[in-house]
Image 1 (cartoon, one colour):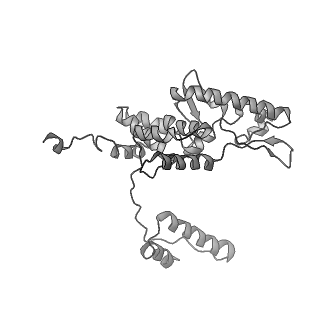
Image 2: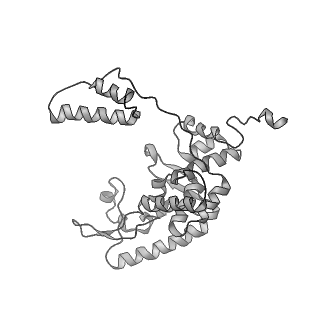
Image 3: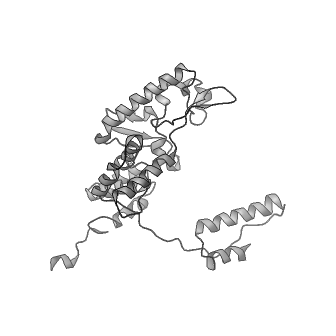
Length: 270
């Protein structure tokens, strides 16, 4: 097994995650299928993990991309950039997680199962409020036909049996179809599928002419970089992004327009 894993790293030049996946698959094969108890391989050559800088859009490029988007997908993309949300964090927002008076969004069960608070951008407030009114109308129509349920986290459905039909627990970005639960007969909606926003962003990047390999996550990278460029403290940016370590946030100092360390080039003094 060890020789094969070394072969993957040295000859095939796979990534460390691919090698780890192969190691886990082999252990499962030996232990669970063949019934042979083997120890995990030790001192196996590991592929070097490359250090990649994130793709970041300039403010004008963000405007160009968002300008090519419409409707719900544009609103979601605006929150990705304006609040620094990951795509699934955005799509899993509940109505109760948006506070218009405090201009805040509460992110529940983010990466690492952490909750955090980030800002609700003023530029999105009006459109989001209008969107939520449509969500409320849709939910009321669902209730009238015997649907209107959503899935609740963990064991809340047992603790609060009717909470899944309350407006506060509805998805901000609800799906377009009502699904019928075969066991309970309840009609429920899933949140909007991530591929819908991903496709819209990819098409908007293409139409905008931005020559960068930008994706939904690029908006989050741009959010962090632009805040640092504006002079906000890196610890503040860390909290808004939900990074457990400031070392993760520090990667954005390497893509600032003024240089990685804020140093002015001597060539600019010539």
